[in-house]
Image 1 (cartoon, rainbow, N blue to C red):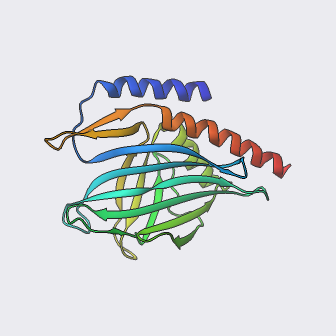
Image 2 (image 1 turned 45 degrees about the horizontal axis):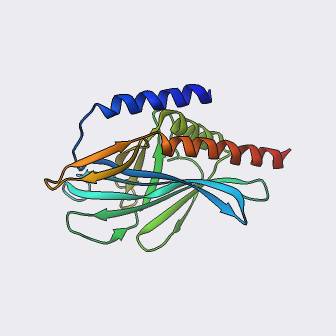
Length: 210
């Protein structure tokens, strides 16, 4: 299975390298980083920045969606998936704002209706915390890892329409030209790092549950 996932990632990189995409809309960067506590691997995190035109709440203003997806274990054998999201209206040059609600959505799964807790993070950000051992969350996480892309859904008020923001985890960085085009660098580095890390964290968690 791991070999199929890696092969698919490399194919995507090859195809993506031939495609020119200078639009501001879309993913600007993703980065994997392991989370260690006392020298022991406890979690796996992907940070991201992506941009969309928000026609639902801001009349098409450009919005940067910044945050992270974190798989976090603990010494008691628990495993949490934490989505952190902040929204910035870059058309107005505003500060980051918290969404009312946010979730992950893959082609076949979503965290939108899963049990969760939400907390205010640092200014302008909100955290959504799920039990990663729940079937719906594990399915969404598995498809995120295998597909290499996911959408961030958010709304700005209770009962408000959702905005779906595509996130391409194969985009690791971007350069910006003088004529305001975005040149995206594609690589499997983010996904390979996250895949390897999640295997280790999950195996460690399962060992504690035996």
